[in-house]
Image (tube, rainbow, N blue to C red; front, side):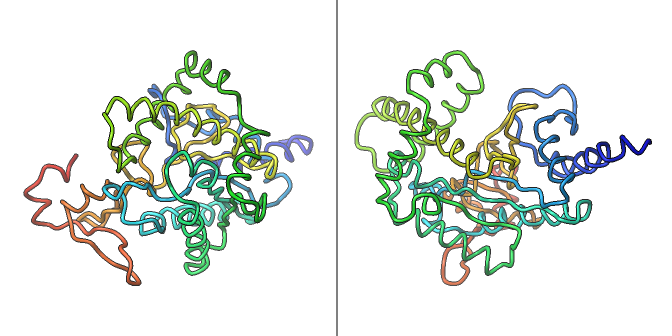
Length: 324
């Protein structure tokens, strides 16, 4: 290797190794004909290589961890629980693993987006504040020093939340017509729209109208959630312009966002804030709706709060649900 090529190939080689640590956790969309490699993600490879070249920590941004679902059949309450703790631990461990091949390491900025669309998903702002504050507390308590939380309060301070949402929407959201056109013409946009619509339907626990009326209302609100999510992503890019963008939604190979799976779950769309953590009899963890987890195990509390479920061996042996 000549002296002129070494400075360029060395960062690429390390960046390839860093991406290799992320690949087992890639949350993909669409069929895969071959196992993906680092070269399948040129956008991320370039950004990571830039951090390596500068000998600085790799910065990842992860929009997510918004708040708990308002449906009590899915979650244990409105505060983070074992699902979030396991996910935060996973992200911190991933950063520590990166440090072994890139000594400056990595950090993940969790861009908590609950306030961005809380009014559309039926969660009060006080619950969203409590959720994000508890995330910060958990990060400190567990010593997860490679993680931080970023939310609308860091951007717009003490403005009323409706004013914050209007500010972000007006300056960053795509138009409704443009978004509808995209959903009609793009399979990825259509899959996201359908996934969010499904979550909105499932998360509505107190609907008194017909099922068809609920679905119509949720389809309309889904467009609003996507508009706000896009706006939040644009705002994050402005505050963290060089960061590698992670996503909790499935992403195709080569997309600007790298979809990442936080915990094992039967559905690629399942997250800790839409479910409860269930510890299987073999010690491994999965995510399931609270109602399902409650049928399979016993509730465990931590610090006086519901935390997760422990699968009962007798139920495991008697029920085929444990394998589905």
